[in-house]
Amino acid sequence: MSLGATTMFFGTDIPTLVAGVVLLFSILLMLVRAIAGPTVWDRILALNAIGTKSVLVVALLGFMTKRPEFLDIALVYAILNFLATIAILKYARKRRLG
Amino acid sequence: MSPTIMLDVVLLALVIIAGIAAIEVRSLFAAVMLASIYSLLMACFWTTMDAVDVAYTEAAVGAGISTILLMGALVLTGETEIVRRAVHWPALGACMLVGALLVYGTLDMPKFGDENAPAHVHPIYAGYTQQDVRKHPGGKSHGDNVRAEQAAEHSEPEAHDETAHGHGDYFHGHVPNQVTSIIVSYRAFDTLFETAVIFTAGMGLIVLLRGRRGNPLKGGLL
Image (cartoon, rainbow over all chains, first blue to last red; front, side):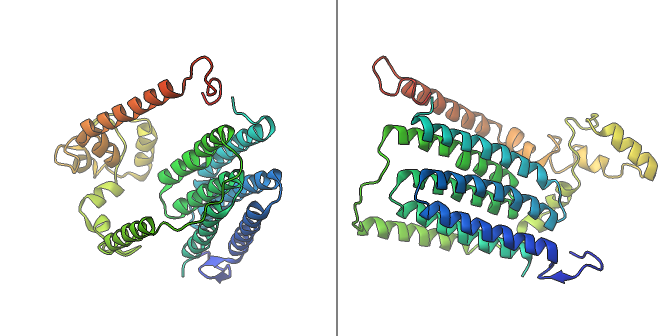
């Protein structure tokens, strides 16, 4: 994996590395909120944010491994995340799914 | 250490945290949320392992449908788990034994990323990497015109056409795509009856959950 003149660090370039570290750290923070979160809404928000972060992780992975086609997978994750959040919110509001 | 491996390690650590938290947390709603988070992180992990199909399934079934079904179960049950702390020693022993057997079973597998693994040295691998998706040997597929133009530009004769699609190929004249060839040609009956089993299970579930008049499930789940 060589990018020519770009400075390399741990086998990848600096922007990708920083983005990856920031993404994973924010996932950790969301996870803490999902576990500790006192209200239901904290947890729903944490789940939705982790879904968004996983979309970004998949996209970043595509660029890390030089396969930008991974963006398609990221889009599917985004749609699924949206549907799951709608269902959870509907349950939290109405206490039923039908 | 490659960046993908580092990503794997961090993701798996987060997965473990989410999994333990989903077991330990008392609020069942939080447990459903954490199970969904677990599935999302596992989907990321499968993507880094290049198992994109598994990742799709994990995201759709684990984070999507399972969450909604567990929500439906929460409608019918309480919101908090009754604390009942007692270690069932025979069950723990059985779990540890099965886990140890599974780990023992993986010892025979080639190392992760091993170039000499059977999957890479088997002669069919060459045919797999050069495969061209076409329905029939010599048939025209969707991208054939594009490919013909490209071939004309590069003035490259279709060298691998005979070996890849004739009856002397690795797929014995079946569908050239390897996965399709195995599932639809060689394991056709297996796949057919698997589909029948899944269909029967689905019909049974619909009949069971359809509900009758006065049933609390009516209009609830389906």
